[in-house]
Length: 379
Image 1 (cartoon, rainbow, N blue to C red):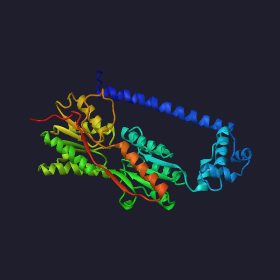
Image 2 (image 1 turned 90 degrees about the vertical axis):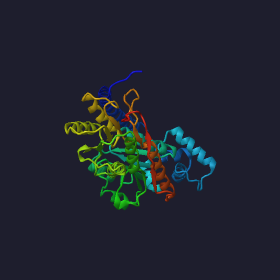
Image 3 (image 1 turned 30 degrees about the horizontal axis):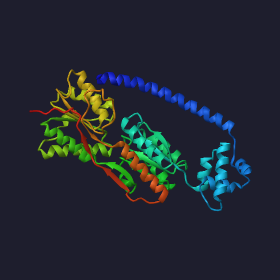
Image 4 (image 1 turned 45 degrees about the horizontal axis):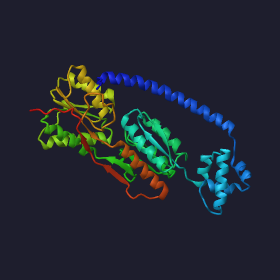
């Protein structure tokens, strides 16, 4: 088996990521040119289809919108054949203005390069495809002003509804009122806004997830545990810290501020946090990073300081993101089923758009510990 170091892997990943961005930019430009050329070549209108079929425009509209009122089966089949033959593409914006419905939802997330959000987006997209909905992906880079711009855009009836994940910075956004005022339904995914507690959402039990993995470390006789937190402006980071502290208190172990570092849920943040903990000359045998990206960053720092996991230090994470199995050591973690969160949220929103009601407005997923061998038992 080929085994690569974390540092080598991350350099390779950054190099590949730069090329992914170049390819993505090329494909976007290419697709825009193709779309422009197709629009120039294909100027078929609904009037043209109606004229060729010998029926009214209203009949064509009813067939497109799957309304059987006043349209025979034979006529509907004939119209659909002509639409296919002429390669007629209905104007979705005009169609939504007539039906007051649009089969599109917006997904607003902070960082598509984060494997957790990539997996979550896949869950949303697959569910949308299942119900013949389209998904508009909006990447905010964790910037609230960029999110606000997307809300203003989507609020112009471009979509039927929206899904908002945590931004990993702050939870609330005054611009949510734009969607409420225009009666555009939306759901949260791991985002907690106290003033909007009636908004439907899909969540994870962060408190018990942190409690569970801390208890696991304590069972391995680790009593000096460094904790690298996410930004405490977010609810999930607060709950993970609370779960950690609670597990310590049950064993009558005091929370040590020297072993605490608030970071940002990013790889570089975990790396910086670990370097700082070493500078403090803090005494600890294990590290609990509040997400896997920070755990990977902390692991790089540990290796650069000449230590090894789990021989010298034990480390655990949170999320169970997907990364290459050739990377050693793998990190013990709490699994957040990102794909299932995305799929559940999309199903919830689509159900609301179709029926106007919700059977279960709040869904909470329970934690599962995934042991990957990054924790050593102290005798």
